[in-house]
Amino acid sequence: MRGHIDHTVSRTNDPGGDDPAGGPHPDGAAPGVRPFAVTHRDVWKITLPMTLAFLTTPLIGLTDTAVVGRIGDATALGGLAVGALIFDFAFATFNFLRSGTTGLTAQAAGEENGREIQAVFWRAVVLSLAIGAGLILAEPLITGLGLLAIAPGPGVVAATGLYVFVRMFSAPFAFLNYAILGHVLGSGRGGLGLALQVVVNGTNIALSILFGLVMEYGIAGVAFGTICGEAIGALVGLVVVVARFDGRDRPSRARVFERRGFVRMIAVNRDIMIRSFCLLGAFMLFARLGAQFGTLVLAANGILMNFFAVGGYFLDGMATASEQLVGRAVGARYRPAFDRAVRLTMFWGIILSLGLSAVFLFGGTWLIAGLMTDEAVRGMASDYLLFAALTPAAGALAFIMDGVFIGATWSRTMRDMMIVSFLAFAAAAHALTPLFGNAGLWAALLGFLGLRGISLLALVPRRRAETFPPSA
Image (tube, rainbow, N blue to C red; front, side, top):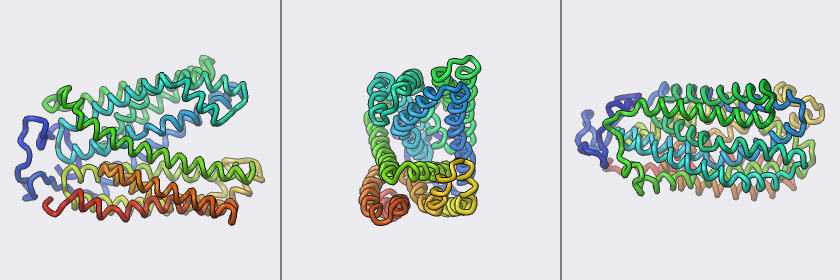
């Protein structure tokens, strides 16, 4: 079993099952240690498909905007934009259902513990459905808070309310898709993850066009198309995942609802959620401080942040590879695989980020022109292009380290360093902005991205020594 995971032969080392734990490894390793190789191919067979999968996500927003835009109702378009912001915040908050499941699944896979792999999956399913149902019940409060924060006009308020009310029924299915994707990625099946994302996003796009444009249900049709797309994707994902489970490893209901397992999953997810809040808070503070320089700078910063977003989709694929490979190494209690996974993902992540920064730097003016027709905004964006082009390079280490710490389930340390980095960013932004204007704000953002990665990397040796003691 080297370089791949086969759950049909994963019944050993299950403390909650019938099989004996421990025993010498055929390679001569210590009991409980399962050596495996980590290669460049292992990194890219996860990175490539997941990068493509993540890149399909913006197509949904573009399609929804095009559908409502073709209707010609500016109020509906405004409602869609505001509603999308509300969902971006609400759903991003619970993205831990994907990443937390990936880390825990990868560790169980490293242990070759098929029963725990299935138990982690079903715990994630239960959490996803419970949180999704809770959001449906809380929809009036979420909508009210979102409208209070954004404060759109009366017509937009009505359109936003309709869109959020309808689309909120997709929450249980969307979170279930997070759990399914987390399981698939934790199992090292990046190609299947891509296929499932294509099903979810492709169906979403097709049905939004059908209900919103062809059947002329407008913004409500777009929202209903999203519900159907998420539901179909969840059904397909469940069928595919469950069909691959080994019946001999089926966990009991008591095992699935085991208090220790749920507490561990909730603790990991809680820390990742706090980390996500801080990240969103940093970007909100960036936008708020940028707004004080006027509409022109605000628009230019908005255009330039697309460079960071696009770079993030690419780096997320590499971070996913580090999550799976590091998590598997921790589960296998095999430090050489851990070290190799960290080195390779850091190497390729930095190479990828430098390439992205070069593309943005030398092709940025053309990209800005494609995104904006206003000459004044184009000129302002070009003035700060260098800062935006450097965001992938500055943030590469943060993406990779997030993957390492999520895979190793060192979530508390990741949370703490995010809080420290956020406070440092807030202090730097308030100090540099009065002195250097928008350039100072961008410099603070680059420092925030860099500090996150460097602070986590500095703590890897200590956490690694705790996870892989000399006796292991």
